[in-house]
Image (cartoon, rainbow, N blue to C red; front, side, top):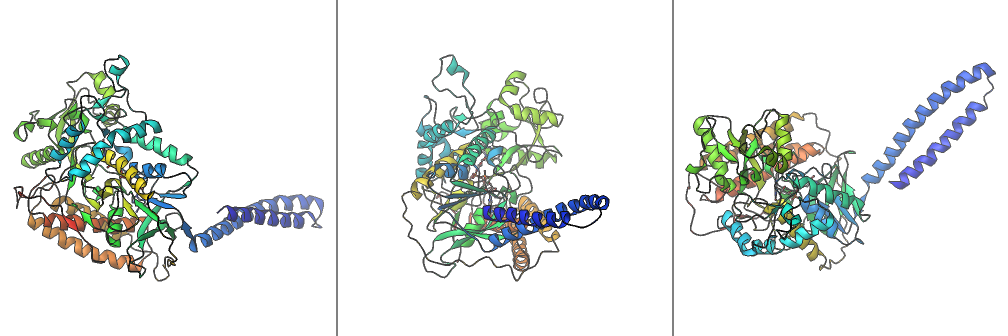
Length: 598
Ligand SMILES: Cc1cc2nc3c(=O)[nH]c(=O)nc-3n(C[C@H](O)[C@H](O)[C@H](O)COP(=O)(O)OP(=O)(O)OC[C@H]3O[C@@H](n4cnc5c(N)ncnc54)[C@H](O)[C@@H]3O)c2cc1C
């Protein structure tokens, strides 16, 4: 790129000199001469700008077209997991980080509540482990839970060292408590253990880590680049199964470039966008899970989708979440007539785990035929509310709801993907040199239901573990040519409506048939619909050039199918998988592991 720019500037100077010579050596009369010079100068400048533009883009295009980019490590995704991995890799390594949006376009920056960790002297690893196992409804991998919790303090210490501005603990300043940062308590946690930055923890973390990564000279950042597919040796005809890179779409130029690296980390976040209502940002289309599946990786427990019980219900508020901490600090759920109802569903009332609260709200909404219920914190002092929930307070106020005075209208929405690419405790997938970390991974931590604020913790702990593992690997050099992306047989699409239509359709039937309450019949219907869509998309994909929208749709439909198939395999109600056909929990516990036929 730098060479192209230099050549372009030399080119500009040469043309400029030529024009000047022609202009000033002309034999026109003096008066006429001046007019001509003015006119010519204007034309010359315009022509040079156009020439340079064409020349520069031609060079860049050529460079991209024939280019393979080589790195020591390729990280796809720039949320909490991806950025942590980038910062933990050695500074001598040449690292690429890819984001299909801006650096902060994932879920991380939207996290409000905080990060769960054992930080208080009265808390213990055993208590945190037990709370996680209880929420996970018997399906957590206890080894993964203990591993995560045992590394929680180290992860928080690292974040503090990076400069994350966690909210201070006033009791510490008064010397009555030992830990310098304030800890929230959230539903399902038996102790105060959620370290936070007011109610915008994700933003504070994302901002801090992003700034750090931008300062790293060894890290090249590729924003607006979408990973299309992983490149594996098996797909290139070798018997061994090893990941060696990925095809990446540059959204600006439209070219697909080959990124080659001996270590590839998927950190692409979840797939909650498969549902009509979600708290997640637009890009959570399960790309990493779909790519890993296509490449030959196992996925596990995809039927467990967490629905956050309380998203703001307002026609103009796009997926705004009312944090769990509001219920933790005394917020009460009310019917439209002001009557509380959680006592009819769980003795822990508003502090019951998310799945129970979401199902209770879903039940009441359907029973009464109303659009939403209410969450009320207005009985707390106004100063307390504004200090602890400044973002929620100001966002609601923007929509005309003063939460210090009135209850907040809320509905459930798809929030977190508990399942994902199956990994071990080092983030390793079943494909050599391919790691999956963060929400796209299934480590066994969450089981059948995620305990609030354990997910960010998982991002940090497993990003660190993956990097530690990568540093022990000695990957042999491979002399294997990777074929360049070939789009010579496809054209630009003239029917983008197909993409937007199918995108809407999949999200709606997933909401209606594969949502909070499931049945065999609804799953069958959903499977039929998804198969028809798969066929249409396959045809569309092989005929038209790839675009970010098409890639997301292709992945979303793939992930929808994995969710449906996993839900069909689970013939019981457990944690987040609730089906009217099998309302009971089976005595034995088993993960739903799907293996692709590659
Ligand atoms: C509203 C909200 C509130 C939450 N609150 C909390 C909380 O309080 N505590 C908690 O622990 N958890 C919370 N969570 C969950 C938590 O935020 C996420 O689980 C976590 O941030 C996921 O981080 P990640 O790094 O795995 O992915 P993300 O932060 O989602 O980042 C994914 C990245 O992958 C990139 N990407 C995806 N596909 C591609 C592709 N094909 N090519 C290139 N790049 C790609 C995206 O551009 C993005 O950079 C919340 C989530 C939401 C939505």
